[in-house]
Image 1 (cartoon, rainbow, N blue to C red):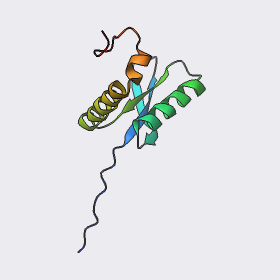
Image 2: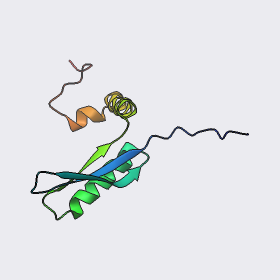
Image 3: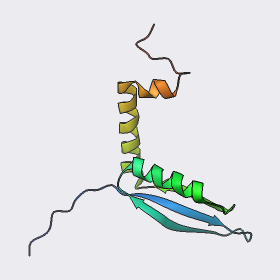
Length: 96
């Protein structure tokens, strides 16, 4: 009768990819995160612990939402100047 209000949480998945000598691949969800920073942390930790040559990790999310989040984070880093600190080869447009 009453519908619960659905929360709009973006989910980021850290996917484990295993490649086999037969040419086939297997994908499984290794971790689930609710922010890009958390997903990157999980992916980095899994890569550091990984001792299997044919096993890699990547981050996936719903494309449009994920792209919008990345653009938002990039724009914020440009505004606060941290983008230019990480990329000294790019000149700030406001510096002559």
